[in-house]
Length: 110
Image 1 (cartoon, rainbow, N blue to C red):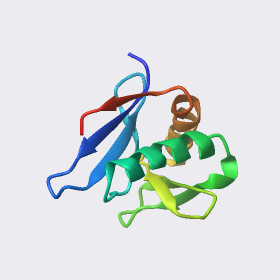
Image 2: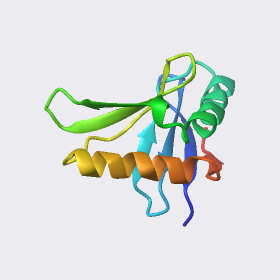
Image 3: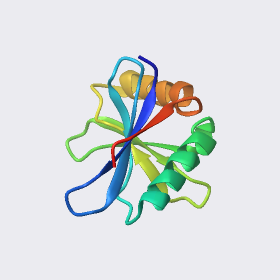
Image 4: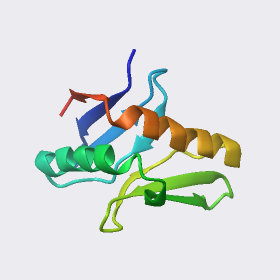
């Protein structure tokens, strides 16, 4: 299986996408978008920004677990990682997004 973006419509009518690595693990989850077109632009923004180290904000979740946000050029969050067991695992998640985003196919389930 290759990496893919999965675009879905939420129960409240908004749209969200996740980026899944080739092993099926979710490596990035988007914010909610009010339209499908906006979510598709979000996917394009992930593709554009994923390769830039400066776009990643490393942080800790409320429970202290390492995580990261991917930000667009306008500093808006376009994706949030899962929580990781340690900083090295988080850095591996960033590397996974960098490697997967550019060529990931889009699976439209919306």
